[in-house]
Image 1 (tube, one colour):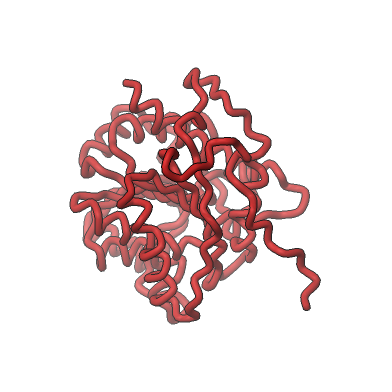
Image 2 (cartoon, helix red, strand yellow):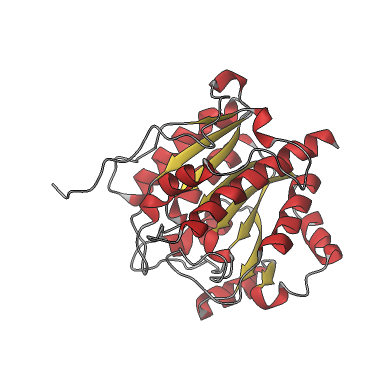
Length: 297
């Protein structure tokens, strides 16, 4: 016995009333998956922290003038891959995500470490032939292997680029290895670097999105944000994104493209830093609002 309290699997996003799966447009899939974290630990606690914090989120969105929860939000049971083998665990995630996408739901995955993204992207790519991936992240995650694992959290975008052959756009990257930089140059992978965020104009952003396919999978590693805004992540990097400029980018993404699924990963909750948990929950709700807002345009 570790003395650790049981995980609160009964938690739902927002703790709101629209829980019937058939009537809900969006589903939340919590995956407390942590196998390859290499610095700060604790991402397995991320989904529960986000769900708890979401109960404090106001339903009305003052920016959009609507209540995004009216689309119906169903929270699925926690997914805990059984296999100890990373490739097999990712395959479990893929097979669990696919039925919800086939049912036409907007799937929001809560992590957990970033390696899980490969499973949900595979599921989306299997259903949508022309799919691009937009990555908000402090790190490139383009290593071919890290600590002898090709399925590490530091390799997830390499697998998406090389194994799945998907077009990508990375935003906010400010920490990469020489190997990753050489891959970016060799394959001409589009990147909006962290030091470019401050001067990023609407035109540059729209031009970058225009080069991507119509359908998009959004993966949001919370270390994209500057640690002054969200310090509770395993690998914080200075020089990251701030709230409203990031929201403008996300709003343009959801309006200009068809975002078919998304994930929010790498929250490592820290005692007393509830603002990080709440920021992650608010991010999810803003994205649900932007997706709903697109349907009204």
